[in-house]
Length: 268
Image (cartoon, rainbow, N blue to C red; front, side, top):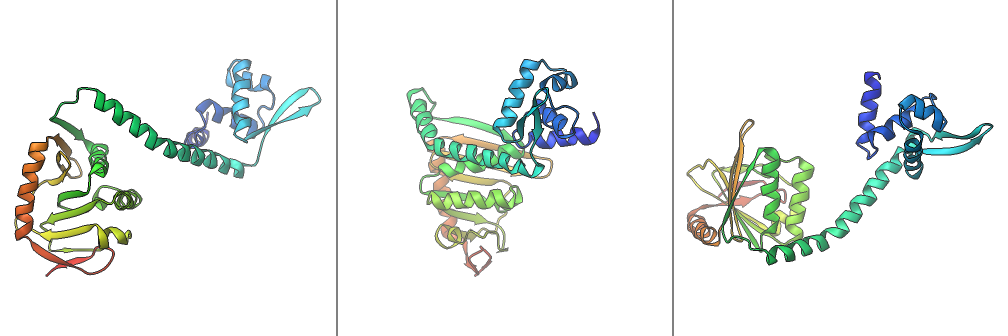
């Protein structure tokens, strides 16, 4: 199998087609096989399995059947019909989104039945871990307190960061941030988070970790190109104590002047 074909198969699998379905589709598309028998021989797959694969491709709208002189034959639709695969994935995603609240509710109910420790420490590593602790902060009830080295744009794509900010707005989570920076460039197009749900002040003394405080959670993390480490501590006593320290620092911190609805700001 050529490198080009391998690449094409890999691309097709990104659209929700299995590898064997992609191989079958390409066999038909290239004209190397248009009957179940030919496909079975070319792919070295049992004919009964080939029929199941063809049924899946037909259901996806990628293959059609036609009656030939010697029985049923198969052909592909034009490649531009691949947009049907995207429609299928979008439909599946919408279905999952609609099911999510029910699933979260049921899982929360089940977790309450178990014996969850009052205090626990969770460790996360790598970029995926950093994203996870960031998304976890969407659980904040009312307010999120942060010590910030940089905005989420430093480790999330713009699309991911903006989607997360829209969720903070939807959840009506207010964020108060302490930073050692003296000015901020515009960092978001979600203007509502800037105008309604965000406040920031300056601390003269720099800090090495970013910190999140919300509910019963005290989370700190550090990220650089080669070192991403996060620890999330669930302890009401610790969270309350750290909240008091934050309030003390906040009261003496210097205020910023916000320049626009995109978050640009300078010290007063």
